[in-house]
Amino acid sequence: MEIDILDFIEQCRHLAKQALGKHAGEPASGGFARWVHVVLHCFRLEEGYSYRETPNRLKYMAEVRDALGLDRDDLPDHTTLYKLFDRLKMWVWRALLRVSAQQHPQSGHAALDSTFFDRRRASSYFRQRAGRTIQTLKVTTLTDVESLAVLDVHITARWQHDTKTGPQVVRRNADDLQSVAADNGFQDWHTEYEIAAHDVEYLVHYRGSSAKAAANNVLNRANGYAQRWMAETSYSTTKRSLGDTVRALSWYRQFREIVLMFAIINIESLCETL
Image (cartoon, rainbow, N blue to C red; front, side, top):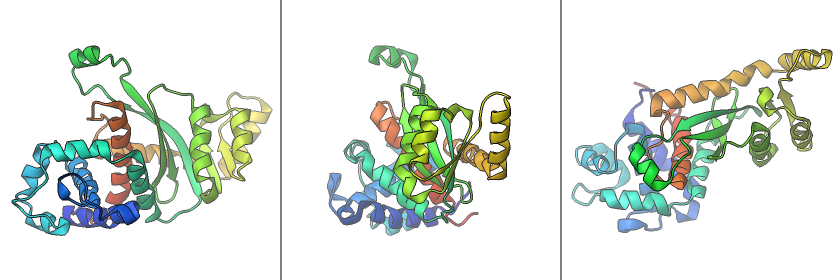
């Protein structure tokens, strides 16, 4: 999505302060406030810059520096940006995802689906030396079917079955949900009972062509199952805008990067388009 970069920075600044709460103004690496580092990582991923490129590009973006309160001669070093991505824990990026989703209208109806992100950016030589055999990460998301905001993300390198990851995502957001639509990969009676226990209507597509399965699928379509494709739309938007490959090398950095990518997509739709 082509957006106004200054508007994007201002939206990120506002949401980063919300996500960090009382910790927003605390100094982090290099003496810069934590919210500044969060916004810089949003800017880095949005523009597709490397850690080295980010401070260099900021030198020539006066309005962006002004929005962040940075001086041209006192920008964070690329090593500072790299190390702080380690120090900012996962809760920071999840909080940013949550507050970015809250800026969109919440319908209470969500779609549950899974996709994969490639982690093969590193050379095969490095992967062999590092003992990395898993080449893709499985990502399960919960997407609002009206606003297309990604509400929650679950990431695993072990490719857990959808019936294991789906209930975890729904459980964390059950208080805000009325219904969840999912394909037949998420269908088993354990999952149905668990989600029903949270008073959430579970619109899951049944396998097979039995009379019971056919009747259930017809009823689900009447209740809004067809909106499940909205999750795939959010995947398509994310991968076209930010790519389908994670750049980080360590698994925990990759997990954080994926959460940040979906937060950025939520923020992009709040910004002024070009």
